Length: 441
Ligand SMILES: NC(=O)c1ccc[n+]([C@@H]2O[C@H](COP(=O)([O-])OP(=O)(O)OC[C@H]3O[C@@H](n4cnc5c(N)ncnc54)[C@H](O)[C@@H]3O)[C@@H](O)[C@H]2O)c1
Ligand SMILES: O=P(O)(O)OC[C@H]1O[C@H](O[C@H]2[C@H](O)[C@@H](O)[C@@H](O)O[C@@H]2CO)[C@H](O)[C@@H](O)[C@@H]1O
Ligand SMILES: [Mn+2]
Image (cartoon, rainbow, N blue to C red):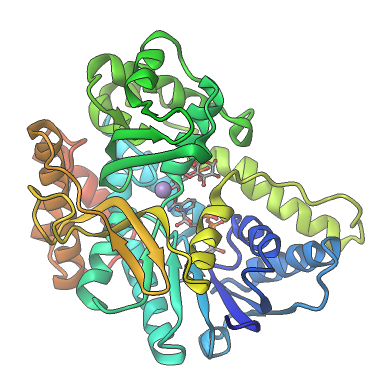
């Protein structure tokens, strides 16, 4: 095992960076890093994060670590071993537009679901392709572990442009949902072997085998959920967005009790209710600006003012651990099971081979080895096929600069009831995204 690893966090100024760094430091025996680089296009955010991570290294007595903070891709990626990617093209200001524009037309306005997710996709593809391009140029053997959203759309673009890249796309939602369920109903998630299938933020569990209880606990979880609403787990304490999200899990399994859904299906099954529940003038982006984002700026300011005692406060749940566990499994060639976002290639036998799906896989030194699952039912298959086609059309629109394909994608998105509404939102988003989207004509 290499014992002088260099890692880069792309989107180093991200509010999630301290969580990933904390997880990396907790795994130093199995993942021995000597140099950490933060790469971002925004020097102000880089400077703030440098203060925070430097303070974290002091608090953890790890001043031996070399910390490089840069806006220069060559400096960021040359000879790096692992890249953790978490960029947000356009920042929270554009997330706010993604959420608020569709809501004006009574359509779902959300970070990764519905038309907000599609707008974010058209912004994000260019940024992520650029990073993969840098890694190909400066460290072609490096592993890229990606959290950048919207993951299904990003993964479809990467599948086309860099099919052989050493890149693994993952999402923390399944692990967080499992943790939330386990903490509500008295299970230990560490004993679970979940079988899950779908697209990112758009899927279902078909089985949750508990190795200590020696049974599939999914049916009893669905029964419990039909009777009581869930509370948030400790890592989402006090967050009213996640509180409401998890409460709606009960409504979903009352409608469709045969499989446990990903919480994000709320946006596709109950778009009218989700719109009704929203404050169109103060959306999730505003909550994050006032919460996680403000907290990050405050910590940096405190350090700048010389206040360093016990000022680092963050709680990201499993977010950092999940992606670092994958890095550890690769480096040590200790294959473990994770949920990954990957070309289907027969994993779901009755779904097109080139769909980008989210399924269980073993990950070790050779990367992703996904499982062959079971055929899926017509309800889930129909939903997935429509959404896959919409996402593929959107990625076509990006590569072909095609307005027509973008309009088709927007119309086919599973939260949109009419081509008229799709066109109104697309046209308004085109203006709002003029600095970020490719030209569409
Ligand atoms: N997949 C998951 O499950 C999961 C979970 C949490 C967050 N995320 C994603 O992680 C990302 C970061 O979220 P956040 O809330 O911390 O956002 P953020 O805005 O706080 O941070 C993102 C950083 O990316 C930088 N950036 C933007 N474009 C860039 C580019 N082209 N190259 C380099 N850096 C660039 C920004 O300057 C910013 O500092 C988002 O894409 C978010 O959706 C994904
Ligand atoms: O609205 P946000 O920015 O707080 O969160 C959006 C993300 O939500 C999921 O992830 C995590 C989140 O990262 C973590 O901080 C915690 O609050 O729980 C969430 C559920 O695990 C989702 O998987 C991401 O894709 C979203 O970006
Ligand atoms: Mn996610």
